[in-house]
Image (cartoon, rainbow, N blue to C red; front, side, top):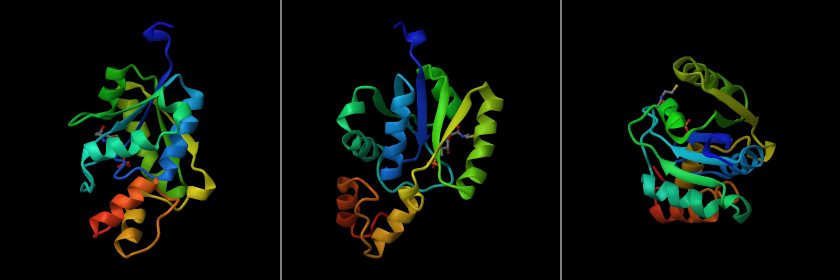
Amino acid sequence: MTDQQIRRAVCPGSFDPVTAGHVDIFVRAAALYDEVVVAILHNPAKVGTFTVEERIGFIERALPEAIASCVRVEAFAGRLLVDVCREVGAEVLLKGLRGETDYAYEVPMALMNRHLSGVETVFLPGAPQFEHVSSSLVKEVARFGGDVSGLVPDEVRDALLARGDGGR
Ligand code: PNS
């Protein structure tokens, strides 16, 4: 297969940190596309908790072995998402949608990205068991001593516990 024939999707996000819901989306994306690029980008509305290197490591080690060879994880600093898609040769953006709040947040971004470069966004419905799981809620729960087992990879849970502040 030539590089042009490879069907590549970008799964973008802050992933600060990756959750079990994100991993579910990566697995499902890998079943639909030849290659998946998990792209860590800067969200100007969010203050970072984990370093970009930590986030990359958490994701790489959380990927099931069956998909590890077709998923790559990369950080793209100071760049528009549409430029990342062009750079890696991705035909679509792929994201999980958890419900109405996500819809209201994601659709303007999807339309803006299409306006900027024509790239389309494919949405997969979030798995029901992870509907309530977001990086920020998990951090809040961990900060006040709640158990986040099963909501994030075990390594992420342990890292949140080790921080003491739960990832403020
Ligand atoms: O996981 P998040 O924080 O919801 O992901 C948002 C993210 C990082 C994908 C978005 O902020 C983004 O695309 N940032 C890169 C800059 C950019 O292209 N902004 C215009 C988006 S329409």
